[in-house]
Length: 410
Image 1 (spheres, rainbow, N blue to C red):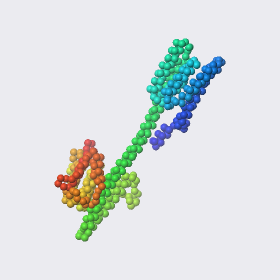
Image 2: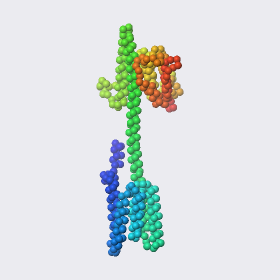
Image 3: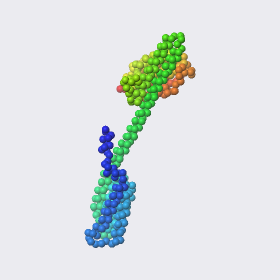
């Protein structure tokens, strides 16, 4: 609503828009009016006094007026050239007439203020006043009588300069507002694109966490169920049921994630509707550890300190533990102990996951894409933290991530 209101107030009327789109019409009309004014001035004195002027004088005056009128067409592109031509025409008419016409010079000064800058217009006005003073002084020295309208010339050109300065200021102000609005619109579109890209990256990261974690555990459980099918069928069936539970949970997580990402919800009565559960946090860590234990990973959870209140920090901690344990499940061959240690102290959460598996062995479940370490590093960077991962001197692998608590300083 606000955008339409601004548009309706700022859009010009049809006549003004027509003249804005066709500036040559305005310039041509002004040049024609100035030519008519000049021609009328050539003959008005003869008509008023009844004394005919010499034909040569009339022809010269008409030629000069025609050139000066044609130069008006340059007022937008070359106002300085227009000022020079108008002064030359005024001096030429002065030689064949008895007056110093201010109209042409006023048009040039107005154009300087509108289409160049106020400083240019005032420089032109000062030069015109100086030139007018010289003309008046010379006329008094040679005793040619009063030279036109000296004081009136200065007054008229001053008024033209002031009007041009006012119009130019308003024109430049409106132009600045339009430029600023266009820049803001471009920035808004860019921010929307950046936000969309960030959201896609977030969805990709979350999808990787959900899929990699769930599939790795499902593969491990399936292998275990197959190995126990003959010897311990009841445990094999438990593994199959756990696989089904994890698969359904992964589907629900992906459905909820995609619903949030697309901004569209599911029908409440449809089979595919999924509640938009909150992101996992510290309270879900024990269930996560239990899931990995059921997949055969001998993992223990150690938590030191008070869990921070930041939901985002809790989710990041959960996802980092999840990804690190998924990597341990894949690559830590013959691991006897895996420790997920979480330390909440001094406004910093430190997450470390270590295992004593054999490094360099074949993956126990599936080969990853390398996005897990990248995702953990990105999560740490969001909080201004760091991530270190690498083999241990005595064998095994370690991942350590530091996450500063954004609410630690109030």
